[in-house]
Length: 223
Image (tube, rainbow, N blue to C red):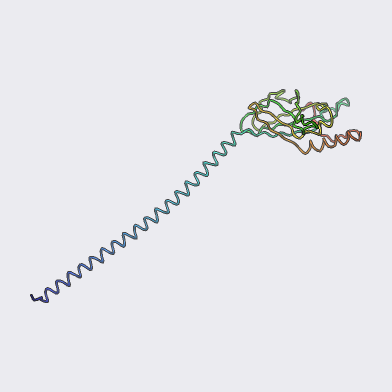
């Protein structure tokens, strides 16, 4: 069987067509691969951004939950002091002996009912006394008495008498004033002013020297 030049030309032409078609198909495949890779990269970028947004959303949700929990907590500041209570005209008959004063500040986002104010103390020699009950302290206006419903961001003041504590030893044993709430929580507080004034009173009580008028005063007609 003889092969003519025409037959050879047809074969070459067919091979050329097949080769071109293969190259075209390869080009299309390469283009589709690159396109798929770009789409995959964009999808990964979007996924990372979505994950970052989700993380931020979770952080904001946690912060919002913490803020909500903080707003639901009772927060009181208890500040005991030793002060003198005198009249505006400075009556010589005023009892200028220092007396215990406790300020309770409500930092909660809601009203809190204060049911009592007591004193925390170091135990005595037999270890039995670790607190003092403060019976019927005078509560300043507008509350007047305990229990007192204290609005948010407001304060109330409780006044004792010079003989609220039976001895200097009892006074010196105080470590904190304690405010009690209607829901059964307790909040303690102490101030440097209390510590300094009590130390002065104890020192003067031991030496027998007269009390100095260094104690801050509270005017009766300002309550």
